[in-house]
Length: 192
Length: 234
Image (cartoon, chains in turn purple, yellow):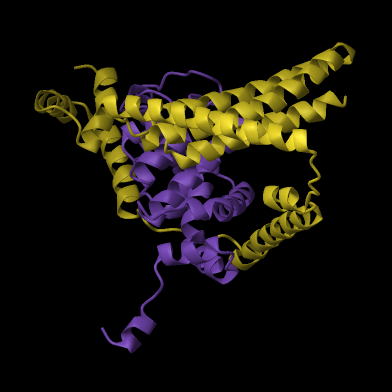
């Protein structure tokens, strides 16, 4: 590899964390530029609210700066940051006293079995705006599990560990979240 | 299979986690029941959409403004830390203190000091040799990083617990003056924080190297301390 090639190679996330840990704000800004969308999107989907998501993303990056020296590069930086973000959101929920096993706004309401004749309208084709809107209307517990499983791709075992619940609870929350989401998407179509 | 059972299993079908036997039974039901087939199609399109768009992120409304806010907070914290460090008087090192002392000893003091030194050195040698023999006789056990991490957390918790105990006593003294609303607020906050402490401790028991949980534990204990301090003045 020539010197020119070495110079043009982008600095790795790990390299930037090392420099940021020494107080290099330029390196930390580069990390922010690389990852702010990822952090903000996760916060937004878990919070369902733009201003709260922004506040939480801010808190995540401040926390990141405080503990960046402890990142040793054993895992990918994105994985580490993802975990930090999820923990920050969960901590926020705990402070607000949100019960993660909350099922619906009204409490434990069983999902109605959909009969063929009840709603003849088919669910509209899923699009980003409609889905984001419907996700934001889910209760926090549903929203968290749906985001972590279907959007972020975590397994139920991981989610159960993160939320401190059983795998069965995670599965049942996900099922209820999907059914609720389906109902919300259908409602959107009816309103249109 | 009835519709209720079918819709319970549709999630697993969509995620590909059904046994062959259940899948066959479910497929038979879905062929006959339009309502359930409709649910399956809808859930499939939701999940497929999410999977296909995984890794697509939306930008914060004003990423530059957000960065400025973050930088301001970090710089303010850094400046505060520097200020605190500069106002703290420099600790006099043990050796500089020791060497700068003026030593004026009388003959009996000098003799007593020499005797004490000899006694300490001989005792130290005897104890050291015995321990060395014992250590050779039994296989030395290296302390694992796991136990070191656990000890570090335990030490920090112990220190914070001392402070918490102190402020807790003050709170208990003042509690009689509080009205019911204030008591409820305090208890509610304390319950949430204690829950966070317990959750972090459980995580750390599972994995003593989990730095995020360690950080969360620390934050929760600090919050508990701040809450107790705040309420001790009321």
